[in-house]
Image (cartoon, rainbow, N blue to C red; front, side, top):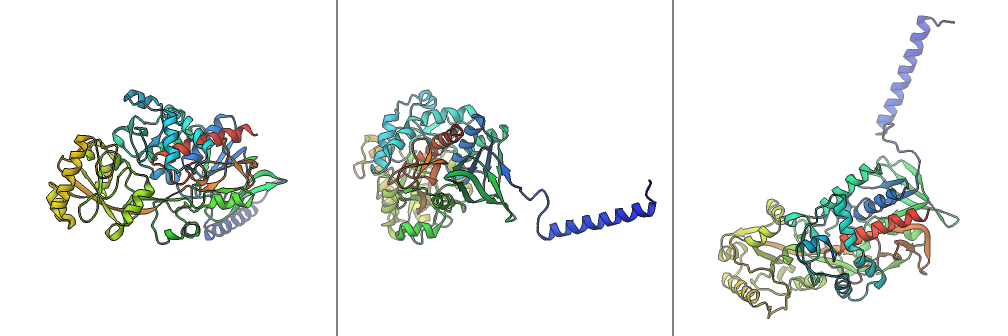
Length: 482
């Protein structure tokens, strides 16, 4: 039986009014249907989308498992985006192409020494033995890691980065993100993990909230925690090291230790929490980190008297402490045109106005309010050490070039909180352990959220190695356990 035109019109009007009402209610709450994330189900859920999280996601997906990544920030990458210097590995194709002889054993020795033997030897063995494979894996995915330099604490050139010494972190994130997208891995940004779900001692997934604070559940049989460290959480930092109260940080704002808190709530053990590293070359006014590669390529550190005061390639804690003993607790990173040309990352510092520059050492000293004779004498003495291959003042072993090519540059730097070596206790497969050393079934972790790998001090270039090696392991282990 046909409805009358008036009846149809009335229904249409009522429908439009109801639709408008629902739309207004949705707009008032700041939500649309597409904004609201409903409950999900997957095999593996990964918390965090930095180098570790993306590596884990790719490996779990390649193992045939469905994966969802949640990221609380608006973009993927985390602290990995800020990594500049390189990725340490020994025995790579890139080293071979440059005639560099190196070994995993040497990398292991440097890492243990740099960490003051506080590292977990089993984890360091995994790190150094699988580092070369991590580099080759990234190269296969499309990464350019053809430039190899040296970072502080290393006995060989093993820090891999893009051509010309370009910043490595953003490049690696781009390569991993594109690989994840090509494999159809779902990444939910502006989505904060709130709780790891456990039932009858089995991992059941997580509770998360979207950008509009709507809570939802992602059911999963395995969870990988890859949330990074807690370097941007001032309260947490000073809880473990009161001496760092008032320090700035090189970390992005999301590095607040959430993953540690969530994992501890389900029984995870912690290790090395008091081991917090400062980076010695950070721009005091804005917390921008100047890569260690500048020193690795030949720059020196000078104080306000125009004098060197430390072996520039000592470990970060030693250089930081020495800098804090100088007037105003800062120093100047000094380099010449030759070093600028050797490392393209420096171009970014110049563009951002971090450098003071001059055509001569005397002019630079004047611009810095420094004694010109002292600075000239310091540079002359250092250059003589380069020529002789012997740093008689501070025992710097690697001095790749003299400082003699005008222009000359200086960047004021000082220490800031950089890396938290402590975190969740894991085994060599990336599985999280409880305080008694027993594995927590279905719970895995990788990257700076974990502890044990770096001991009392992390060597520059080992963070990215940690992220990729243990991120891959955690992803594989999570998939294999299902």
